[in-house]
Length: 123
Ligand code: TYC
Image (cartoon, rainbow, N blue to C red; front, side, top):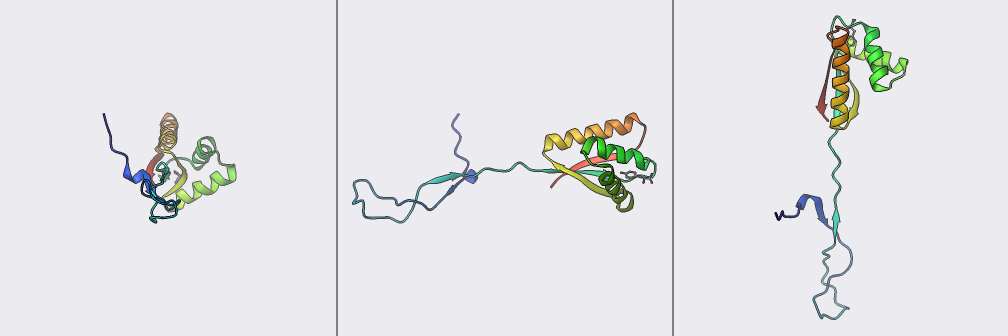
């Protein structure tokens, strides 16, 4: 099936001269029909950790080390931010990676019977 070219993915750029067919090569009409493909960056997703009153601090620190590659010091600092402010962004990823992190954290917390909540939102 024919589909029309996506106009948001092509832009007209000013470059070489354009001439009518058979025209004197010296005459420039002043427009270009050259196109440049525009690459669209995929949307990114923030992964958020939420505070609660029951999950032990050291468990949260462990989660941040294990699933988000933080050092102990970084993990402790982010955990304290969540504890004091209610939530924090713990990373920004593609949809698939963010979703995987959320599932890993929620599953790990559930298996240890902690009510820790992890969610994601589009940047
Ligand atoms: N508020 C929890 C406590 O005092 C610690 C905690 C920190 C829980 C961060 C969740 O995402 C969280 N034990």
